[in-house]
Image (cartoon, rainbow, N blue to C red; front, side, top):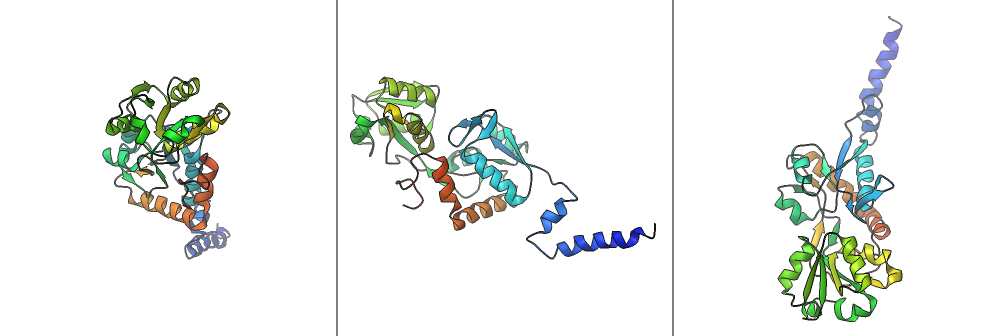
Length: 270
């Protein structure tokens, strides 16, 4: 038994000394004690931000989630949540953080605490190329009586057309995919949706002549949400985002994951 004392003393000394090195102490400690996983709630329903690809979570938020888990040195666990129940899942601590294309306004309406925004989003028009001159640079002609506007029912685009006082026909769809199909088929002239969604479908159907507008019709910052009492994770999320901004990596990630983002009016460089 006495032969074990030197080895045990060495182990204790190693753990104590590692505490003097902030950059590596957590990593060394985690070799002996596996921390709780970082449970990230995602709706997986809004490409290119969050969606399923071959049964796996994918998109911009998945890239951020992987980066945050590495930053806090915790194993990543993606938890699928619904739009209707995601706030409840967070408030009941079934997940640690929501990373799912959530606007700051929507989060605050549900009494959630948000990190700093990572993207200034908003509603933009998606149209066929021959309609860009009329509908792509502002809302002036979106209210014309002969314009057929498509929106997803109860979405922010739906709210926008009401605020604009649109006089033309308004067509409600159950999903963005249905709206994009209707636009391609010529059943509507414009589809109003958020920036990531509109640019995603423009890229998917660029061969069909779809193009996104170049003007944000609303401003909707997107951010991650944490439990109102989880100040520690909030600080970690903000520090992670700040590190991406300072290194220039945030711009690169947004350019990689959001079509048409690079060197446009949406880009952080502008």
